[in-house]
Image (cartoon, rainbow, N blue to C red):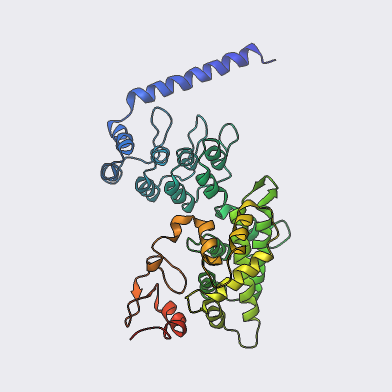
Length: 376
């Protein structure tokens, strides 16, 4: 039983904290109050002026112990969230009364774009609040299932940390820079095998490194499926697909004349309808080797493709893209790069003006296909 003196000390400490909170309520600076009011109204201009010109700190709290970033995240003001982060706001700051993070606030209010922004900025998905719930748990509890799936299947850098950190006497499996590249591959907004190969060409063109990367992805994929009721299925599938493409890169680089350009051309090979048969074959073959065949998303994908012949719509690539990023990700596909599916490709074929490219390299890689139908 707690001693009477200890009880009295606890009560006194609580009283002091309450008095401090009351005092803070009374003396809140007008500029501080103005910042929270601007965030409440979504007034980006006023927020920008108060922080940059009036030097209002991004680390202040209101009477409810909410920081500016927590407030902006809850209201889904993504532009304000980005601005606060760029001006020193801590992406993992907590509300001290219940340990809510900005990601949790955005999750329970169903703000998908804000969640993506916070995740990209390094928000930790494993942090729990005062009752032991993560941001994903909270999103599911309030019915924001799309947000919950986004968070659960986002590959944060913290999940890769054990692989680039030495474990006891064992050396790290990969370097930190390689881990960043793997994260970039798995989190591609528009998933296309050629995009992964291009990243390998630029950053990971070494057989031994690629083999280690495959081992990391395979291990990570297995850890995504904890049991039949607890799994991160989208992330497990993406890890598997990227691992498959890295395996193809290893095979090409292990030949007497290593050349990943030949692999790109194999993936881009089209039929008369413009469907990339190389990508279709690679994706369908990889699905046959996926270990967790009872996952709902996998079953849905296989069921859709089982009713479609190779070379017909919907393609395996488009179905996988919709699964990974949602149906909205397939909009404005006529503005994508014809080679790697990068969105809003700025370059056009100067002759026919019918296809777009994100770079001159992609234009050159695709020329052996496009030259057959380019109307000069």
